Length: 308
Ligand code: CP
Image (tube, helix red, strand yellow):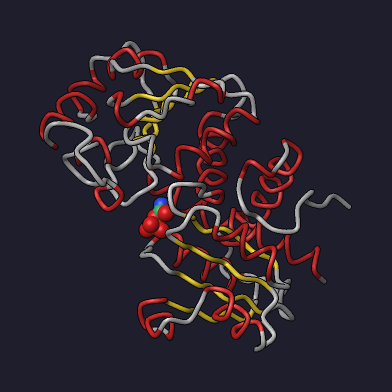
């Protein structure tokens, strides 16, 4: 039987092409399951999962919890804001206390890059990275590629542009690794100040003219300006950012072809994307959210099958 090459999902960087194929084939099955009238399977009745979130989340937190419940796992949720972390308890002490309650898997979002990697070296549980600072957000990249595959039939050979704050984006980095692994052509587009200098070493092109980037691509993945991670001003004003790097209906209607619009959420409507684009038939933003549950079911199921 096929199995993942890894025991934890810490980043796309640690996966190979076969892992991604296996996750997608497993997610195809679970997508069919969650569209049945009975949306649940008994696969993980003997598994307990802790979702520990040290940073805010809507989509990822709910999607993991739903995925775990659809697989019949026992689920406990932990939010740092209401916990003894506020009294100074360390990450390892926090997680070891949770693991003493016989937890098999930890899904963690943390503001520090590498937090999941650190944890995987110090605790005996499968670790799933649900976003670690500006490092990686592997399940987001998997659900993004799965959604492109669903919409366009394949990821290989497709032109994908990632637009916005590339410098602070874990979604951008994980997407670049995932898309390149599957044979897509990738460009990034945004203010030069928000594009890391090393980006071309990842096999990614740079385009600072949004219209040219959109005319080149099959898919545009629009990113949010992450004000919470901006320590200094990287562009003059939000209005100027929107004028240069925001997608609106007029821009889309004047392209040479119809492209697919994606966004990981949360959206800043009217900044990186107007509402008429976000809600248009070219947008697959809510399909991405739906696919997130199937992808996370697949990841959890495949990792759990390695600890049984
Ligand atoms: N896409 C994403 O990670 O959204 P949340 O921050 O709401 O989980």
